[in-house]
Length: 306
Image (cartoon, rainbow, N blue to C red; front, side, top):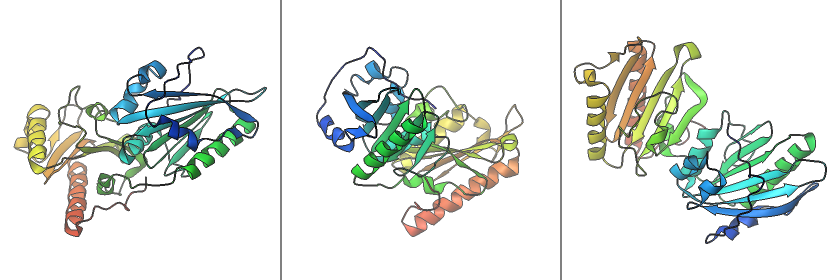
């Protein structure tokens, strides 16, 4: 997992509109750690701050970030970042892109590993990090995280497409939500271009199924209307697997199986399946989920926990 750190000699202070509101989510002090400095960055200068990871946030719809450094004698600094995203789906998407598991300790989903703690809530993604993790620093980080969690007043729903993932054989938390095509290849390489016309008006999710030695990948993309879905499906079949025009599943050169289908405005495709039956079964499970959601007129938000 990538951990965000402020370069030692960087003291750029840019306050975009409404960015000062983010400071209200942060404490001035936590245990022995006291606030030392604040920095603000927006989508015009984010590369000045995190050149290697800016694309992640920008692709999910980033507005601004506050970065606050806390200092404590005889301890490494703690850096806390609150990313204000365009919407809850963007904050959720960043979290699914970065987390390896979900501990549900803070916000609407969190993960704590050596020297780092991340979580998301509403349209905010939060990162806390330090170069050296100690019992004292971990306690301070958790206290800050709890303060932020309490200060952000609202929660929001996860994207509805999450409820269309079949539960059987789904790898726990093994999915990534996105609406930018660069994340199409998160788990399985598909193409180096936007073969499925993914954009800000689409919802996409790619998920892992089965054991590591029998791994399948399910890709779902929901389009704003059936016309857009049909155009994307036609392009995908033509350029990725023309054999699907005559068969319901195809065996690839590596002896894995692939299939794809369109359900109204939902595109679904299975990759790397160990057998033809497994590929078709997973696709049929998606169809059943999509049909149920259509019949109920309400997307299923409760089936899969974020």
